[in-house]
Image 1 (cartoon, helix red, strand yellow):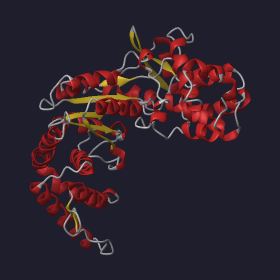
Image 2: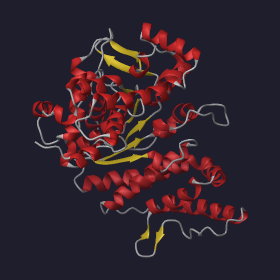
Image 3: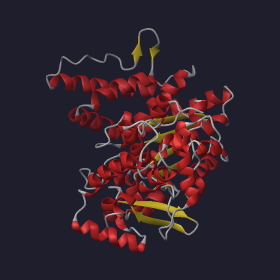
Length: 446
């Protein structure tokens, strides 16, 4: 079978998430759960499907940025939709300023996405209380615009009103938050208005949106509503005015309000919270342990190659080249993509099982030459990436890396920020539990 190079190039784009609704793109999906210590999204799924929509749950999901969380959450969405649930999945980073997130921002974002999703399936609601709340906020913002001499910005009129469709809650929230997103000053003014009304917002979302939505969906033959909020793990670990970091403030201090929405919820959370002194408070607040998605295990604790993980990572790459072939036949086409099978294995091992980094390196190789990709071309890409990573490491951090290599442990919030957030160290799970190892790019120069 000949290689379709343009299709392979598009499929290898590290910034493109697999769309599981597309039958061909589903062939790109590889189930890594056997080499990740289990399928954590299957656990999320069971928690939802074994309970009634009238008994909502809030679950937490985390892991390294780029390790495949979004793909796994889209798999969860796909599986739940196959079981006749109405699933609202969205990337919160599209609505929020990740350096400055408040609880009301998240609540409004959820309300907007749910409202838009319901309108798309012709379910109309009458959120009168919500409408009044939004119009009060919009009057405030219009006043602030005039006071700040920005009268050239268009007025919002009655928020969410469309002359042909009437009132749209999703449109209304979108217009409101778009005004505030690009202006810290307006965002601050909006929060001063919304913060004392947080309980009112929660009541409006529950009584005028989520509960009627569940009833309407059941009447239409659906099992209920599920909301998956992706990318909240990307909020900056910067301090708020109170001195608490954003993750601590949002998920620990305000976690009780985030779980008060009356539908099944899944939030992604920053990995740093797993190493925080507030970890016990976090789990007590939500009543669940966060599910962690580790790296694909391509090496064992003793440093030897872990063939099961290596085999699956090979398939992830080859499936993007030959999605229509079964796994064994893809392997037979390896030399169509790489000069030697050893070059493919080198690509898989040097990235330590980090899915996006593996694709990024593959994409860089494809940018410089056509397949079959040479060992020399790959080594050039490796050198560039290794030098970029190593130049940021201090003497003290090299000492920490040596310690991790010896102990396979990372402890405390400071070590997380230094080692894991910077991708100097990766986390793995196996039958013995969790363990850590230095990024293979750095191990070669330790």
